[in-house]
Image 1 (cartoon, rainbow, N blue to C red):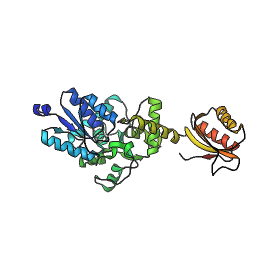
Image 2: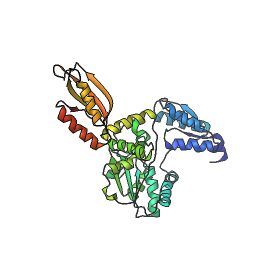
Image 3: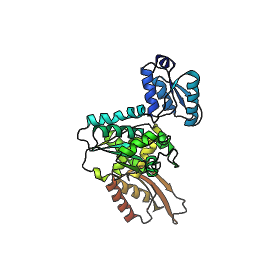
Image 4: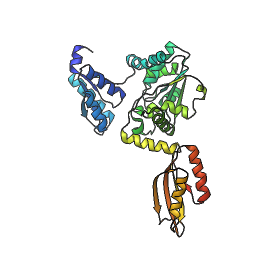
Length: 347
């Protein structure tokens, strides 16, 4: 940036890793930085930008509204408007990840990289890795609900707008962008394989990161591990593999929902109903059986009046937590032997 540009400042308009990085480094360099955000943005995210030293302006209800306003302010005040794009400079910046991997991990066989959004991280890293060692396999992973790169490879051209209905609260800026020509051509030439992962597998991968690494990642950050958990890359078994864990942009309430959902998907939390007699002691017998099996009871609901229960019987719904799938299977066998009315509720 010229001295004049540094004096006037920079402006960004997307809530993602890129904008956070711009805000942080601009503040470090004492360059004024303006962040335009939709009015419905998370307060915790707004606070983070402000703590970095950015001037945050709420405008509009969508990312498109914010971007339009950012361009208007940039033209009017001479700010430098920074955006994630398809330029060689931007892709080269992302490609430094590949250089770091190559320098830090010897005898590497493969690198797994998230391919969501513009796929810039995948393309840039692939360019660096393949330049340093063409024998290292580069594998891209994207959400099954938004397979932008896979569809682009099928049509042999970058798709600008892919019809889909991904969970935008979960995937955030992964599905906010279209793919550029440079990015597509690099990915087509250098990426060895692209796979798509289900939302369920990504949620379980997020849970594994918390349990084994004590780290919180979002859907994009978990996709590489999700591909391995789902068995989509059996050819990598026994090989030296690096997974790029790219982001952790999740609010606390969303983290809680994701963990709860992942525990169900991993057969660690289950929900069932049984019918028990209305006479004294029947409820105690059920709870005693759960205690003997060393099952943690999370919630219980006793319904005396239920259209599904027989006369003089009540329906009991329980939410329980088990250590692992083995204990879960044992619980299912024990309950089915004692309660013919047992019904496991959908995950």
